[in-house]
Amino acid sequence: MGYPRFLRRIRGTPCRWRAAVGAVLFGLLAGCGTPWLPNSGPLRSQVADEGQRGGALLVEVTEAAARQLLAGQRRLMFSEVMANDTALSYVVGKGDVLEVSIWEAPPALLFSNALLDTRGVAAGVTRAALFPEQTIASTGTITVPFAGTLRADGMTLQQIEAAIAERLKGKANQPQVIVRLARNASSSVTVVGEVSRSSLVPLTPRGERLLDALAEAGGVRQPVGKMSVQVTRGDLVASLPLETIIRDPRQNIQLRPGDVITALHQPFSLTVLGATGKNEELNFEAQGITLAQALARAGGLQDARADSSGMFIFRLEDPAVFAHQTASLPIDADGRVPVIYRVDLKNPATFFVAQRFPMRDRDVVYVANADAAELQKFLNLLSSIVYPIDTVVRYNR
Image (cartoon, rainbow, N blue to C red):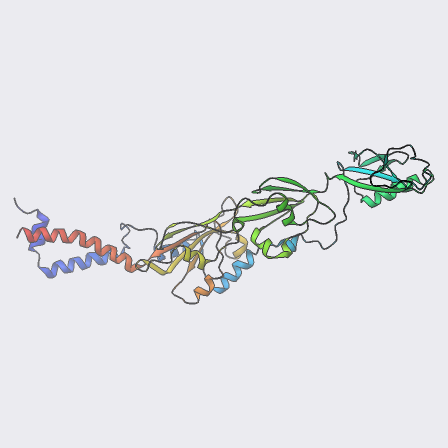
């Protein structure tokens, strides 16, 4: 059986010509970037081309860029937007249930035949006239015998007491009035979300704070490090990691009636791809992590593959962060623009920046292969093709 034509040609070609043809072939393939070689993603130069074409904003991760990013993404603290040093004046409202007690100096003139409270009262001592509990009506009023209908909504208990006593002057003998809140329905906050039990937590003159309400609801159901707390007060909405609220007492703000507290379980994550120790989705805490921490959790870079100057963070960013550079970029449905942050780990100063550079939920971290790694793949592929051919030629000589 004769040799195939290409084997006869290779066998008959002088070694120096075979070497020259191999060198030319290698140069052509290397110059084209060997796009047909298996790869985990684009090379550093290809990512840079994407930025030059205007598909995304390419930003070098430097100290100045990190400061700009931190300034644009600074989280508002509860102490800045919801703090109120003014003492809360505790008032009652519609739906609250009140209990009214009235004392008269002896001899009692007006309430001598009323139901008297004799609990813990010695003989001969003035006793209180008790009236049935009543709910503040939708009109904001209550009715007291001989005092008539009085305004109660938006008033303190002391103001209601004074109003009743004023109405009874000249009718009762030196009347003294005490009004007690039997059930609180108007001055409360709502606690929902990842808590043991969603609750309507009543507020008292003590002045309950944010952590008090969470404790009243049985605490959070997830690890503290993975929880955020959102407070809605009227049209104002703000959120902070629960760890921040616990660590900084200023964020444990005093609550106001009508506040809605939502405990959020937010398993933030980022995706790591390319020439890293492991390619996977990494979960991180609501408090957030830095680039240095993310890189460590990914197992660092693969020494045999990674281009240490070709690490990239793909992020859909708020246009306001780089307002003067994002005008021409495409905007997604959420109003964000594509930004590629390039990290040069060959520069030692970058490791200081990486300790402050914040990672965000749904970031994609990609480390490109080094050119030498691509060359090695090409040589391995070339060897896998040439070596069997050379073996066949030698065997058939």
